[in-house]
Length: 212
Image (cartoon, rainbow, N blue to C red; front, side, top):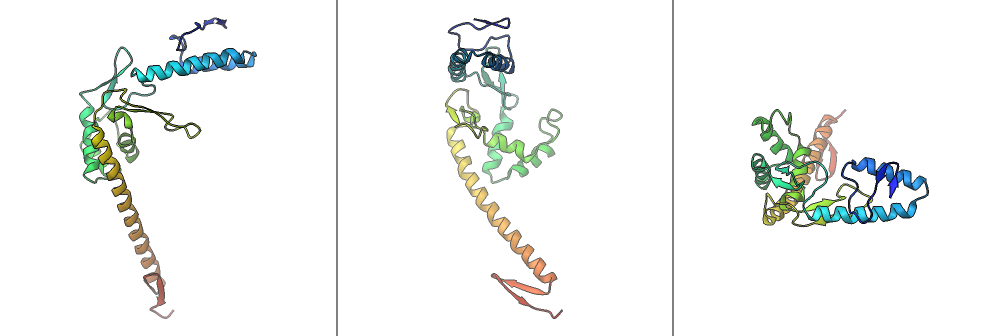
């Protein structure tokens, strides 16, 4: 089928290789506006099945994650020059260090500098919570309107599944400790305010300790 000079081959699973995804998307929109809804549906279905097959074959969409490189065949391979950084981040987290603690360590050691000007907690968070490092890909992970699809064992893992499970347990421990710290911080704040106002705070009870 020909549409605005672009040949969409029947039965093919992918959009034309010379088009970017957003360009192909724009073509489909124009086809919809021109009343070709049925053709768009068929093309979209073929594209969806094609993307599913591509992911299962190790063709992971999006930016290449730290610790991997994209091979000539478009699959992700382990990058031996950066995989140890990823592994160390997981190991530091299992030692009980927070995302910010780990970021501080990486900054102090100038890891990947100058490519990475500054590590921040969210950078570490993205690595710790990315299943790609145990070989799995999560599609639609950040899309609240779609259910996340998990493709298992589609890339070579950097960490074991056992380590991933340990990290999940450590996250629960860290979250529990964070809650306790926040509670203590809140209690200290109450005491500071109470003392400033000439009051004493004890187990939820407030009493006057000075006359104003």
